Amino acid sequence: MSFFHWPVVAALALLPLAALAQQAPQTGPADPDAPVPASRYVSAFSDYRAASDEQGSPDETWRTANQAVAGQDTHAGHGASQTDAPAAAPLAAPAPAGPNAGHGSHHH
Image (cartoon, rainbow, N blue to C red; front, side):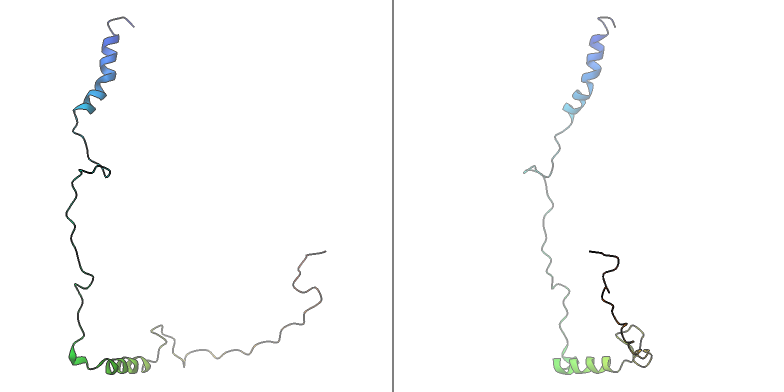
């Protein structure tokens, strides 16, 4: 390479640095002067609807709900009614255990 090519190579190597120097400084999350959107308070009770007086007293509401659930013939909506449940099979007597039962192939 000749002496005249070195300034061109150096200028090309410094070109990305010159482009970075022209950019405006960018703000990040650690910058205390970074613009942030205004915060807004939203109450957890903003969609709350009070029980109306037409439903009756709380004990009447609970009784009505309990009667509605007790009148269902399915088990918590899972489709298995008590009349459809299979009868429990009698348990078989356990097999007599030998002196080494439960030890498998473990030898002392």
